[in-house]
Length: 113
Length: 110
Image (cartoon, rainbow over all chains, first blue to last red; front, side, top):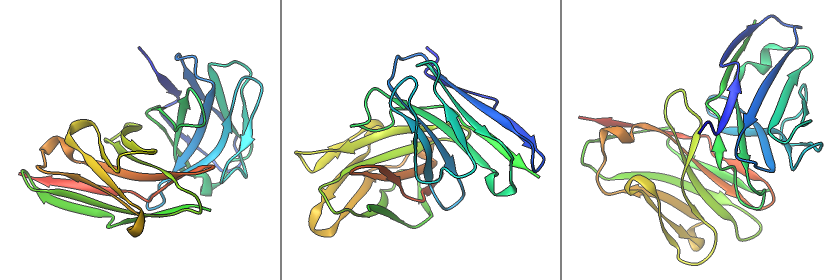
C-alpha cells in the first residue's frame, strides 16, 4: 500500500525557475495538505484542499499555488523560485479535516540557489 | 490563535532511562492535542492524540502523554528509552487550524 507519495524527492533550482511538486494518495481521502518544514520552526501549512476542485490558503501561502484537479492528486507550484523557499516540503492527507493530518509523504527536499 | 512551545530542541537520554519531552500550548478553546514522531528522511507519524475524555493518553511504541489543563501542558513520556526511539518529536495543537511546535530531537545513548 503506497499511502502518500511525493515526487520528486530532491530538487535543486536556480532563483526564478519554476517547478511543480506532485502529491498522490491512494486512500480516497478528501483532505490534502502541503506543509513546509524549516529548522527550528516545525511544520507550517502552505495550502490545503477539502476536496476535488477546491483549495484554500494556509499559514504561509505567498509564492505558492496549488491545484486539485483529481481527488487523488494535489500539486504545489512555485512560479518563480526564491532562496527563501529552500525547505523540505511535506504532503499529507486525511479523511476529514475535523481530525488531523493522518498520513504524510516522505518529503521533497528543495534547494534554491 | 493557538500556539505550541516545546521546551528543549534536543534531549539526550541513556537507553533504559525515562523519556520526558515537554509541550505547552495556548488556545482560546479546549484544544485537540497531538504528538507526532519523525524518523530521518520520513514524514510524520501520529504517536497519540487527546481530544476529550481521559486525560492520560496512551500511544504507540510505549509512549503516553497527559493533558493538564491547569498547566496548559501535554508532556510526552516513556518509562524506558530504546535505541529505536531516536527521532524528532513534534507536539501539535488544533482548534480551527493545526499548529506544530518546533520539534525536539531525542538522542538515545547506549
